[in-house]
Every structure is written in structure tokens, then in C-alpha cells.
Length: 566
Ligand code: FAD
Image 1 (cartoon, protein in one colour):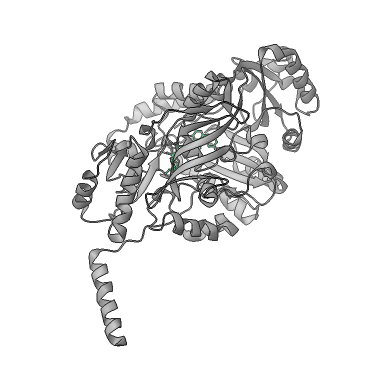
Image 2: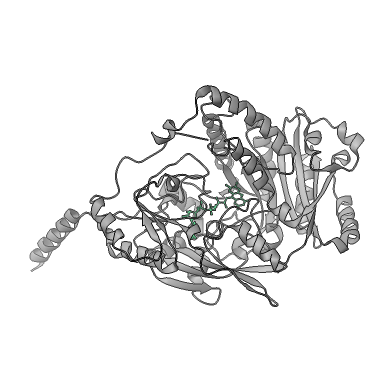
């Protein structure tokens, strides 16, 4: 298969594995605290085509009058994502230049009805993990082509920016700071699109205060599954607005979003401290997210059995007490790192330092492990990209990423930590494990995003990279087994866990995931995408398919029924 043809020779892979192990240690220690590593894996492709008569379909798509264009060749890019485990080739890729390109294409497919299984997937930056932005034999819309109109900044009491759904958050950041402004809520990595993260949630260290990105949107322009272009907000078409936010792309394609802004700081005080005791670590995290004048960013991660941890971090962080820090031994230990940041402008340095000292004095971390750094606001937010560039340079960005993102209720986080960090995992060498609490009482609960029932819950993200062809603990099979053990434990211990960036195969599992929100979700689907054309890669709904012969048969049966009734 295509992937195998392009696979590197075995010796090179072995060498790459060694380099990758080295990088894992290096990267987790430097400015970038995330190893979003990765590779190649055989395609998983369905064998049954969702529609016949594909030449007719191609011809009918070709006949559409568009500002942009459709391509029917070289579409492998649209059959790839960051997860690198699912590869579904589409029939066509739309490169839209206007919203009307998207609308006409969907309208055309909608009007074809159920005679074709043709579906449509918006593809943001393709950073999904399980093929969610792919459409097997369908049409993939390359949202990044949709640039026009330019970003529009409203500067006033409630500043905002209007941006394309295909815009990358990193571009939004660069443009916003030119106006002295910034979005409030982020993801850890900014080379993701506005529409892609708003279809999920967009969670990072600012979410405890501002909620996820979906809480910081005033208005959306959406193309529904019938091709209708609708503007929606809290006041106008609210059902669609809240449905689309966190709606996994099921109800419409976000073509434009109005995102709320605040004044941008220039600098960031970036801090790491370590704990050996999970109880103290989580107690401090929960204390910080509930304090009024807290840090501006609160996250955390787990490190199991890492050698020379603090020394490795010294290239980017300065220990408060270098002598003590150099004597700290991380080997063989399970450590919890609290990562926090305070934003400031240069003229506020003294005030910021006092505030940080006062906040730190309330915490119970191991004093010798206090590490500090000062970086620009943009550098801080774009921290993961540095790691990406290094890995790309070494050809190690495109490996499989069997990631698992879970939301665990606060009342069960200790049960979870005991089992997972005490039993299931023996080290964290395949990638970082993030763990931090958020408080959803400040979030808008009308969106489609599903969360645990308690107000405070933890995001726990296992961000593993699998080494191609490895049968060891860094291989795909081992990591997938580990993920399964974690999921099985959550289920058997009845933790009330919800998946973030959820991935299920059966309808029953989706129903369980949505719980009491399932009926609303289904109702919205039938209202805004009645033929189930949109985002087939999420595998929640399947487009009904009737061939012409089925229709003929049905008509015959209808005639028989009718004649019987006469
Ligand atoms: P895609 O993968 O292209 O699409 C995702 C889904 O949304 C698909 O179903 C697609 O069809 C649909 N979609 C795409 N564009 C639109 C649109 N305009 N309208 C409607 N539907 C659309 N997430 C977090 O919350 N926090 C993080 O800190 C975080 N860090 C990450 C770091 C890395 C390195 C990576 C790879 C991912 C991270 N993510 C994080 C996950 C990320 O938010 C999701 O993978 C997101 O879907 C990626 O955005 P994308 O633009 O690449 O979307």
C-alpha cells in the first residue's frame, strides 16, 4: 500500500528510534514541554465503495461553477492526519475561495439525495487523530484555502476579531498582537484551525478562567448540511450556534467566527515545580484554579522514571536554587510537575514578582525544584511549534499518534491516578502526560461539548508517539493496549469519565458518551444535516444510501401496497 512504498528502510528506522528516544528526553527538558512526536502505518481502508457511478458524480461535481476549484488527483494529503493511523481517500478535494463554493458544493450533494453515499468533510489543518477530517470517497474541503475576507478587528469595549474558519490560530495571534489584543483561551499548539478546534472545544491552561475556546465566541457563520449559509449567535439561531460549538462538525461547516479578545500582555513568567505526592499536587492545582487572583495559565504533567530531569530543563529554565536543584534525583520516581504562568508587561515586573512569590508561598511543592523563566507572550503560546520544527527536520513528526484524552471528575481523580500512574504505566518515555483541573461552573453548558457531571474535572492527556515497527513498549500495539487498559479501568471503576476528542465506533458507545444530550444531538442532526452528509470521519451517523434499484423496488412495493389498498 501507499504508506509501505514510502516507508524508510529498517536500519534507518532503528537509527531513528534511537534519535527519537534521545529527542524525547531532550524535548521534555527544554522550552517545549510537549513531545508531539510521530510515523508511518499501514492504511486502514474500507473495501466497500459508498457509491457506484463515480464517473457520473465526478462529472456532476466538475460542472459546478466555483470561485475556487475541485481537484480529483493527488489527494493523499486529504487522506492523512496527525494520528497517522487512518487513511481514507476522498473522491475530490474542494479548494474553496468563497463561502458560496462550500455552499454550492454541499447543496449539490444534498440535492443528489440518497442516490449517492457522497459525504463532505471539512479539513482544518488535519490534526485529528482518528480520521475525523477524512471522507472516504467523499469530498474533503480544504478549509485553509478559504482566506477571504481578511480578518476584521473590532476595537472597542468588547473587542473581537472576525476570522475565517480555516484560519490558523497562530496567524490570529500574530495579527491580534499588532492591535495590542489577544484571544483569551488557547490550545497548547497553535497550528490548528479556528473551525477545527471550535468543533471540539479548545482546552489549555487558560480554560480554568475563560473556559475553552468555544466559550469565547460571539458569532458564527455556518454552512449547514443542506448548503444553507446561516449566521448564528447567542441571540440569533442560538440552537445552531450552540450545536456547532463542540459539535464535532456534525451540524455545519464554520466559515467565519467572531472571537472575543482582551488586551495582550508582552511577557510571561513561566514556572515549573515538582511534587512526589499526587495528593499535594492536585490539592495545589485545585486551590490555584479556584483562587481569585491566580496565575493566568495552570497546567501540569506526570513524569515517571526520568533521569536528570531538572538538569535537562536548565537550558530554558533557571533554578531558584541551582545547588539544591543539581542534587535533585528524578530517576525511578513518579513526579508531578505543576506548570504555571503569569502574564505581565515590563513596567509591572516588580508587582508581578511580588504576586508570583505570594502565590508560590501558598503551595507545597519540593522547594529545591522551583524553576523560572521569562519569555515573550508569543513565544510562550507558540512553544510547541519549536519542537515540531526539530522533529520535522529529523523526519520524526509523521509517526502514529495513539493519543488518549480523558476528562475525569475531581472526586475520582485519586482512584484514577493510583491505578494509572501506580500500576498501568511504568514510564512516560513515549510522550507527555498532561493533567490539570478546570472548573466548568464558569463555562457555558449549552454547547455540544460533553463533560463529566461534576463542576471540577481533570483533563488527562496521554500524548504518545509510536515507533514504527517496534514490538516493544514504544510500539503502537503496546501503547494501544495500554490505552485500552486505562479505558477499561475507567469503565470498570465507574469513574464517570468522558473522552475529549471522542472516538467511538458503535452507536451505543456514542449514545453513552452523549448521555442525556444524545437526543438533542440527534434532533439537531436531523434539522441541520438531515442526510448525514457532514463529517463522516467522526463515525457517529451514517448517510443513508439508496441505489436507483432500491428506489425502483420501493416504488414497486409502494405500488403493490397502494393497489392492495384499492
Ligand atoms: P481537523 O483535524 O482538520 O478537523 C477536526 C474535525 O473538525 C473534523 O471532524 C473536521 O471535519 C471538523 N472541522 C474542521 N474544520 C471545520 C470547520 N471549519 N467547520 C466545521 N467542522 C470542521 N486540542 C485542545 O483542545 N487543546 C490542546 O492543547 C491541543 N493540543 C494539540 C496539539 C497537537 C500537536 C495536536 C496535533 C492537536 C492538539 N489538540 C489540542 C487537538 C486539536 O484541537 C484537534 O485535533 C483539532 O481537531 C485539530 O484542528 P484542525 O484544524 O487540524 O482540525
